[in-house]
Each structure stands twice: as structure tokens, then as C-alpha cells.
Length: 217
Image (cartoon, rainbow, N blue to C red; front, top):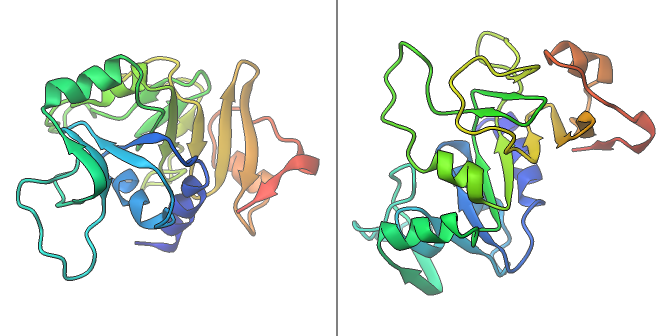
């Protein structure tokens, strides 16, 4: 992992509260388990049908039937349960999952999310993202602040096909932690060594910043 990815994940781990049921989306979020304290009482949920996932330890023999949303082999903690995907999605639809982390292509100031398709490029499908985004109590986005070409991912309005509308609670990037509020996008934390002016330059839409209350990460 890059230093930026580690910064994102370390900050994201602070969002998890002991006792929660947490879902980790494909990509960077699946690595969040490695940043949670080993003694934290938290149940990681996989829409494949597992409650109580944990990352495999080094040298641990994989269970070939146990994979996460990204297809990586996982293990289970004591007390974990395994069930079919219908039960797993029933948990999601009944809002039994407290928190989900997802990646994003685009997020906008209304909390709209686009993370499943870029027109003209192959996509295997939307998977469970649409239902998770609509039904989970809190959605936190983990992504780079800009794409590989330097274009902002945080926009006034999403231009790619939406996964769900007005669903995002918080955005954590390599540059900032930003809350979606009725007043607009409020910057909570900013990366060490980055100025507010540089953050604004890297973002397409307006940001609300109270420098006296701004944290660093």
C-alpha cells in the first residue's frame, strides 16, 4: 500500500465503534480490517454471507470457501456465522448493518455517489453497492482525492451513472475528511502539510472550512 492509502485507512479505522456491524466494500475498504485493533469487538459483514470476518494471518491456510467482496480469501473470528446471500441482503435491507465503507469514482456536494460504472468500460455489475448505499445507516467513502490524471473526484454534481442519491455521510481521502451536510461539504480534518488553499484547488466544488476547528491526520 502507498503512504496515501495507509493514511486513509488509519483515519478510517477511527470511524468504527466497538459493537458495530461493519461492511467493507471492494477495493481499498477491504483492507481496513488490518487497521482495526485486534481486541476491538466489531463484526465485519460480507454480503457473500459471513458475519464476523477477519483477515488471514501470515502463513494461515486459506479456507477455499471463504472470500470477501473483492474475492480475497478471509478467515472468521470466534462466534462468526455463515449464511446464504439472501439472509445477508435481508440484513442490509432491514438496516441491520451499522456502517459501510466504499470506494468512489465521484462524490458530489449532495452526497450522491457514483462508484460502479464508467461508460465505455467493462463493469461486472453493480453488485451489492446500490442496496448498501441506500439501506446502511452510515456510508463513509474512502478514495483518493483526485484520479490518476489529477482530476477532482469531489464534484458539484456527479457526471457518471449514480449508484445512489444523497447517501454519503463522510468522505475520507488522502487530503481531507469531509462531511456531507445540508449546508454543503464541511472539512473536518486536513492532511498534515497541506494548506486549505491547496485542498480547495484539488476540489471542484465549494468547501466549508473553519480553520480554528480543523484537525490534522
